Length: 146
Image 1 (cartoon, helix red, strand yellow):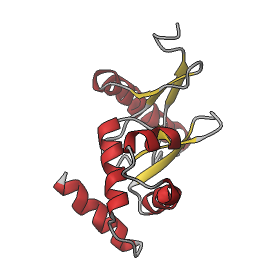
Image 2 (image 1 turned 30 degrees about the vertical axis):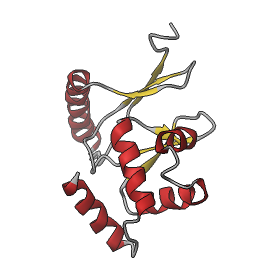
Image 3 (image 1 turned 180 degrees about the vertical axis):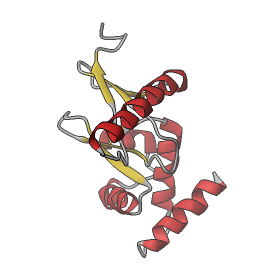
């Protein structure tokens, strides 16, 4: 946690912002959750430690600093998660019925990343296009909804 806080403080300083109690509480919410969260989920998980009056401002500041990233799964609202540079690169499973979003597990992720690396190499050879980043969200029906 100390290393993460140092990194976040550095990123905030670049944008002329500082670490506040509310921003630290938000970081703790995301670390505990380990998955993308919508505003309602953030408020519930924060359990009063992050005033809703400053929540959107703090989310915007953390996104601008590269600490959080906004995710749009076409659900009618935005979710947030720790930026991949703050954690590890990963992909999501999105249930089209209950809107649950979970990160792919490491075992599956390794297989997916290997296939994507092969595809990116083929694209580079055939099209001369260098992929700088990618995002993969798999939509379907979760076990609970099936």
